[in-house]
Structures are given as structure tokens and as C-alpha cells.
Length: 261
Image (cartoon, rainbow, N blue to C red):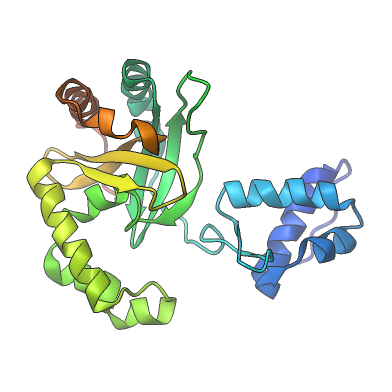
């Protein structure tokens, strides 16, 4: 059934949604073509596409074309407890952000990707901005690696070397998989994971996993920082603050109903 146009359409929202449709159906688009299709100025089209890139719905390739990003086509998580998780994690994240003066993120892992549920931005001028709603590969993100560290060998091989991974284009080479295995062993030993410019240039992060009472991974917490400040997050006092935030969230969420998890 075709839907009627709303009586009070918001043009900028409609243009952004039309861009999503173009990326979904065509795979990629040039800035000039996007502006012509929407009948708007190139500068306006550029601003819309920049926001889609920021939220993971588009990526820009080496030829400057815009292609569909990882957030397009991902399935819904279908977990009503996520609202409670965000609410309960908010205060510990705010405290941690104020202590370390860096941006703190809350994520969950779905297959080979992580999804950012909430962000508490640092107050400093040079900081990492809000990533809530963003979808990215788990293998490059600190929180993603912290969560992957709980997976058994067979499951990891299926995720990254199996037929499904080959068909989805997310498969790793045997060499890259071996490096991932070695890194996850270090994560299990240390209790945290690092990302050094693996998700974007100039960005570093430290990630930990929040677990349930039974020891299953529930969510990930990451502290994102300019790469020049990452090493200071490894100081014992700061690590203790990250671990305390992790444990506090685990305690606060211990009573959540995870029946649909």
C-alpha cells in the first residue's frame, strides 16, 4: 500500500531519506549526481552526505564516490532491554568521562559488527564526538575486540572464516585471523582491548566488556581519545577507573530481564 505524503513534510529529512534509498538501490553515487537528483545545491548535498557518513549509513571511497555504509541493511537487534541498559549505564559513563576527560561509549555486538548505543562526550576541546547509532566492524574497535574475546575458537572461525562470512564479504584471511586470535588472547589476559587508529586515523581507544552475573558478555564500554593521549589511559589509576565503571554497570544491570537477549 502506497503511503500518502505527510501534510507538513520536512524537506531536509526527506532528502536524507532519498539519499539512503539511492545508496541502497544504486550502491554508490557521486556528489554532483546526488545534488542533481534532489535538485539542491552541491553544498547542501555534501552536508547531508557528510552526516550519513558520520552515522555509518554511507562511506566515501578512493574515487570520492559515496557508497552504502555498514548501517544500511543491518537487522534490528530486537532487545527491549537495551533501553534499560542505556539508562543504567548513563551515570557511570558520565562519571568515567569526567574522571579521564575523554569520550566514553556504550556498545553491543551483533555478529561481526558493534552498534553504538550511547556516548558521553568529553568536555575538552580536542575530543572524540558522539557516535550513538553508528555501526562498525567489531575487529577494529576496542570494545568489539573486548566482546569477541569471550567467543570460543569454533565460533570465531565461523564468524570470520565460514561460508557466511565469505558470502557477506566480512571474511578474514588466515593470516589476519591468526593475528586476531593472538590479540584476543592478550585481551583475555589483560582484561582490556586497544584500538590504535584501526577505525579511523588519529583515533585510539581502550575497551572492556560488561558481563552478566553468569559471566556472559552483555555490552562493551570504550574510552575514545586522540591517539596521542591513548597511552595515558594505560596508567594504573586510569585503568582502575575504567574497570570500576565496567563493574558498576554490571552491578546495576544484574537485575535486568534478558529473556529476549
